[in-house]
Length: 281
Image 1 (tube, one colour):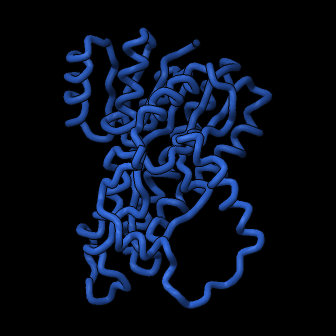
Image 2 (image 1 turned 90 degrees about the vertical axis):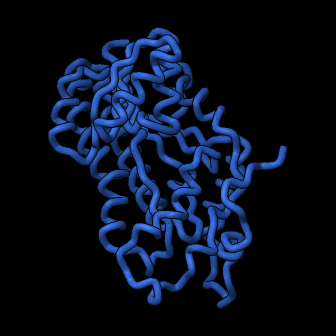
């Protein structure tokens, strides 16, 4: 493998664990973290696990950070950095909506542009996007997040077609609901809104992420395989048992009819769920 593996958003969640596992296996890894305080935290965890890991500040929305990354001669890029903004489409404050797309779409694509040119020059490389099942389907209160991941899916698909002749491969990883804290905090971002709560359609203190959640181990394992080129599929929906359900949801759009004026079942589930509810085995 020519060049290090760069993982963005490696200060927590999927990105940090994948970076540490790859480093433990002896691979050259650059863990890109959003803020400088995370650099020492990830380095300390690497020392605790007895692995060598290069940690760099890489806020994908920062032009200077993206420019620095262009000089790292990256061989494999995992675009993992992301945020999730929960809320009904009509309630979302403008600045929060724009932030959703800056972090999840514009930052990663602009970073990819620079790194992909280096791969093209070397006639080889691998680009992987940590997308989501939300890049294929949509739930209530996830319109902003799902919209950003739908956009990521489009860019990834285009890149795969455009870069094929230059020896660069592209893949997506599409996690479903995994219990990392990411999904639950999506339904707490309203606490930072600077709007008038009286004008909201929904009381977000009463809502929770409307899905039972899985243990994240399959995502770590499959992501490592994809980054190392051991898995050659383009799309990876996890857990694999959700693939049939996702296909059915996508196909159902062709016959979908106007709503009947009643509360959607997933909206009601958001009221009924408790945060962090695991899938029962």
